[in-house]
Image (cartoon, rainbow, N blue to C red; front, side):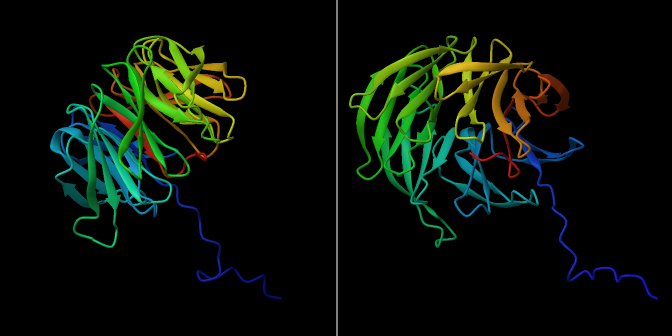
Length: 322
């Protein structure tokens, strides 16, 4: 009797293909493409000068790299790691965000002290970004966050120690308040009521109630020296923050507004990514030219992957829920 027939290529379940990890090398103007699992660098992709941050398009078909010194955006396929196109004429795009309704694309011009709001019109293949407003802000806009209703964008002002809220519909500043020393990344809680601000010039994360007008300072959480960048844990309750000077990553409970765990992160930890397994943390070690891999279950750095100079943004499509 013949044995059971093997599944044909047409009926066999498709093997899940692991998508690459991307690390921006700011001083080399390249992207390191890392193979997941083996953590082997597959190649480096040239970009414009000083790529700092990256973000996914609403249709998840392109990863956008912001090239601050080249006034350009590089679009990369997040699965194949091939360059799709380059858009020019985008003034000093240091940080970038899409609104959830896919209507607005916002950039922070770190050197030029303004925030740009673009209309996202993907039907126009030649120029899908249409500048709606250029808004003068405080000194050195750094990081952005947009609420889930796509109504307001928040931006930290790194060198004037301020937080600014901008209405997306009217492109007008709603309010501006003073905050602590050298604010960097900003993170909205899932209910959009509270905004966390990492103070790179201090050791605190400040929490503001942004449902009030003006916003109210709720708490200062002692995270670690050089509190800098956030990444959601994927459980709607916790967020990680890198402490660049302390060489640690702290886990913050968003209900208790307290640090509940800490992990080692050598070499000036900057941007973070949490893999889909929920236990692996990727950290760009800015001063060590490495991407550090942290096993959060054991609180150990299990690998350091050589990349380019001044690694900044780190990202993969196979991440934990935002």
